[in-house]
Length: 294
Image (cartoon, rainbow, N blue to C red):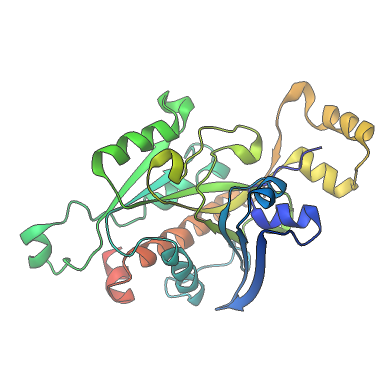
């Protein structure tokens, strides 16, 4: 009875024990509760069903509350993202997901607010005072059903063409707990498997497949319905699990649950993520100057 989740800390909660080869710590910082999980051993990676690397999970008040541009939480998230990125070089920011489906629109909406600067060079940059900006390229990948191209294939083609030093991918995630929806941000240096949380696993996007470091940033917007049912009813019996699976997922269809205020949640989450990524990438300029450019 698999409980689907994209959050590494939830996989750790499911095991219910400290795991050798997985370092865990937590702290309160700038209005956020931050959990850090670093997987250093292959055995721990297998148990947690996550690749080896660093996972940072920030818990914040519900994103249905407003986020101010100068909110302290934005600076904290920007710092966490920045620490996983190389100091110099072009960065490609990719928004993953389908903008036509609200719970999956986080990536495209956040990417649309990222400051693209790769084309601002030479005398134009110097004369406009923008020569301190880091080179950034932005791409909305769409989904395979729209493009006929795997997201990983599309990213790989762009990476081979523009040769970034790193990639930041933004995507909606799946949680196993309703209380995490809209108030959790996960940042990792292990990349992402698009659609894995809802059983639609695609080509993995990570350093191994892309050839450059990949930092993934996401907010959980859905809970797998079967996972939710297992947790609410506290079912561990195999036979009862099979019966529940047939009832909740008729004909093998994957069902997901999302909050009724998902439109507002996506708008606020995309605003928070875009601000945090912009500040992480453009750390060399004053925050007020950056906000003016945005």
